[in-house]
Image (cartoon, rainbow, N blue to C red; front, side, top):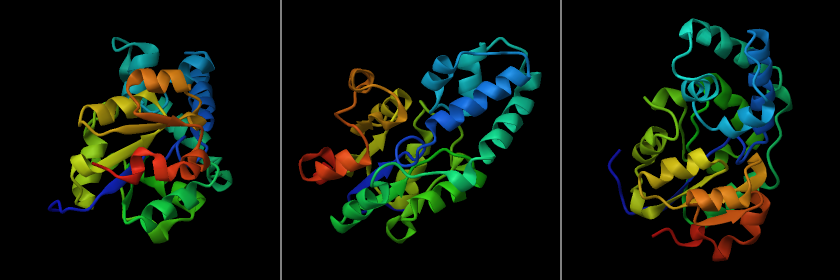
Length: 225
């Protein structure tokens, strides 16, 4: 899609708008335990936000035997799928999306969740009426911290990076945005601290969608460049 003069906001979803970070952590922990490769939950949590390929490299090392990777992914997907009907949005997430749309911003869910997970996330958010574009892992050749999913989101929404802000909850989100020169607003509701997000380069940090909504008029989302 050709870019126009619209301004927009790209949102990560897992851990940013929907409360799933620890569900993914527990699901990976159990999948790894089942295959005899236990990893502490705190270590897994710090890797959430990467794609599964990079996450497994990060946790198990790139020189590992990759033959078990598909079994690990399948186990994670099965375990995580048990939560789909119980997913909860983070505080006032849908209100934040609507407030951005009311300001004339194009609202984009720049998620690298698998296509079969995206429907569950959208149902939890219940804000389809103001969402312009939604990506999935199928849109990115390489996962975060590579910026592929953000490039796909910009292209599909017809947005220019210079008129866009990204909102995410992990250092991997901040890194991906930084590679495109997009300011990233960090939220701590995914379990990553204010100091870590700011240290990674987040231009502002808030507790959760509700806190960002309360401060929206003075936030980087008020006037993307």
